[in-house]
Length: 529
Image: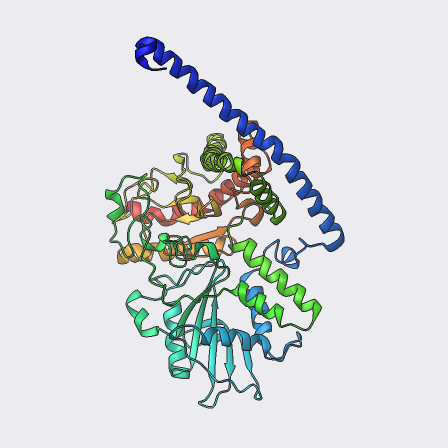
């Protein structure tokens, strides 16, 4: 019927009734989607449990290394042993040969002709002039002289000042043009400008290669894919500005502006294969069952640790795909559910962050020894953007840094922070953070920063550093992936607490209780001056 037939009031009343019925119909479709999908998922999970019982197909030896995650030194030892023809794996030079063949296919990379009849020398933590250590070096004999494959392993830690630059210069002096340095990072982020000045990059074309632990084929060519990592991501690019943004640039932007991603300056340096793909290639040519299983676990570790995979198992994914292909009328409903999920995730994660802030604030107000009375506790949830989710503690009495970036949340002073380093929000870290990068500090500020860094590193557990952080540690693996913990985060926010809340609140309070007196001591000098 038209407005002419019903009259204007009748037309709108009829339209409202039709819209109400359409909404009810859509709600019924969504409900039916879940009703039909639940038994499909339960059947897939039952199969998963049977496979576990008979094949232990989800068992992974890497889960037992270093509290669920092998450390950098152990990972370097595994890689070094696999590359060593004389190691106990018994495969000779085949695994080294696979890697060299893959490297030879890279544009601009040197193509050595290894003579495997002569010994290959593999060294971990190789000491070079200046007191630095290269994680792995492999010296191979060639007709032109010794050739070196060097690997700087960066699964979790940040860069040190001029670290990669010094490695490249040493290798150049030692081997002329007969070397390649692989910068091995989680998803293919390159060294920071702090470690290798960008103006030097053209000089090292073909001698520096950036290899990811895990490369997602579906993300190939996606702009900003590599910006999430500390090794070349937003944190060292002014966070909300372009690379090498001048101090204070981001102060002109609204705090909720979406960060612009830095140019992918390492596009021509990045390998077209990942460490996981090398593990897979080695497995296909391996003659020993025990080693094949180990290589499969190593490949799975790369995918699970660095692939950004959610809590869904392969069986879950296959079951849902098969259901949707068999019921294409439900594809639109599945798309709606997917769109709603992103908004729901933001609401739950943002709510849990505020829940943590309230719990920490309550404990601070109750009085904690060693923490200043003017301590403030604030948080900010930025969603999927890297580095945009934070909870921080700071004191109003601490001095503001010169050249600081005024935009929230840093208030211009040093703070104790909890921050996510990957979308999700995932890969949380906690530590002490400045409101500006070290490269933008005055000489007096750098001296103050070095004094604070030394005190924190000496008096707290061993930690890592970046240009922004004089001290930080990674959150424990099983607590760091909020996208996988979403049901628990919602439940704990609603119930007022639980094991995840307890872990984060106690961790932040413990860090603040020990770090704030150190910050107070160092900042007092700046306050008086």
